[in-house]
Length: 321
Ligand code: TXA
Ligand code: MG
Image 1 (cartoon, rainbow, N blue to C red):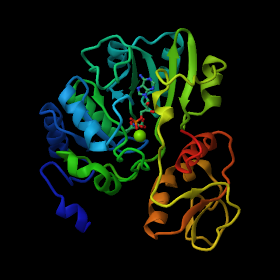
Image 2 (cartoon, rainbow, N blue to C red):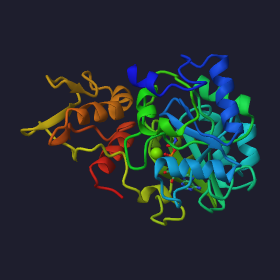
Image 3 (cartoon, rainbow, N blue to C red):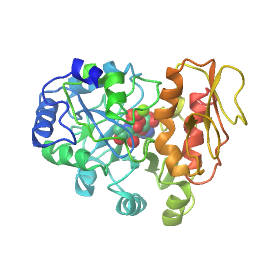
């Protein structure tokens, strides 16, 4: 709390984003400034997608490599179709999962609405309609696409609470909206639908099985850095090294349990994957604060949402990217 007060600013700290905070956030976006805001997945650092200077500030604030493009967030499907060419399969996914934790990568339809820098120069665009009511209210009020990477500094775990978002990049934001803890806790599922091929670029809480049930088998994700730029980066890493698939902790390690355990950190005592996803980043941060020799994480089943959790854990442990 005290920390919040120290960094207090206009438009900030209005709980659950009453009208004033929302208005201040929209005005900040219009002025080319950055805004911390909640989505159902993780907190984002938002900027006007059409404004190259504002978008440059996002890359700067995160220390993000310029080759890694951003997701454009819009209020609804109609707005998404103005910036991206969604084919039949993309539309099926959009209709099934929007508003919600799915991002579609598709051919670009409007190069001015999402500037070159936001797309890292690609002729495709990533677009999503978030489900969080505050995100939706901000997008509706602003009326144009907003780029929003996760509000962490590049390479760090994504923030799933307002306090964590403030700690990561809050000093770079002109306004902020506190929407409480994020319900999903992992970043959106990213699916590209290009040249008649659908590919899973980033697993998330919309699972592979849910997607394939709607549009049939996904193609293998390409190693091509141009098509899957985000897969290159080392990600989600706390300060302490992460050891995954650990049956039990070694001396000096903090232990993130899954299922019954005496450990003070338990992703889900009942072994529930949705609960584990929601807890993952906040618990990596909490374990990190105890300054352990390493953070050992119990094995997580690789089915359903487990694919996304294990993806983040492998990257945090340095096994991918
Ligand atoms: O849940 C989320 O998606 C959160 C919230 C704030 O909406 N945002 C988020 O953004 O996770 P970010 O920037 O941390 O991750 C965006 C991912 C990156 O892996 C990036 O490489 C990929 O989307 N991406 C963006 N545009 C792309 C494109 N044109 N082609 C392929 N991948 C793209
Ligand atoms: Mg991110």
